[in-house]
Length: 176
Image (cartoon, rainbow, N blue to C red; front, side, top):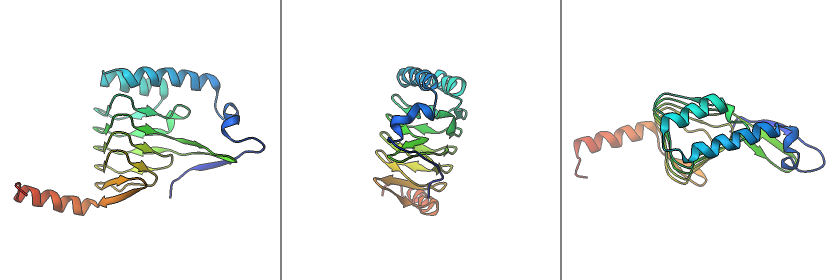
């Protein structure tokens, strides 16, 4: 189950009422920073921009590939640990605007996490340390530490114990 806070809205859909939930100027500033960061090839500069201007929590030596899109409205709800890789064109959402409500939730990505290209991470999920997310995955629930997950909808393909067993077998028999 994702951990999100729900806010009911009356009359029009929640996205129509967006600037009652978040400042227009905050969204405009965040949009400009995110667009600049999406195209910069300098990983350290990108992390500085995320930390300084978007108030994201980004660990040391974490790498955001080109075209990554962190949440434009609530980037401060995103935490990424040390030495993680966020793959090309990944989207990390901390909000959902629905017809009669909107939801906000923290996204926590642990240390040494690998997220494949074109992945979407929904609000309110935690991806544990050492997890691997395959490309084009919709992360709609928590991923345990060390697990390998993928698909749409996402499922756990290998647990940490199964991954360790596979790695040990590959170490013993590298030709298989």
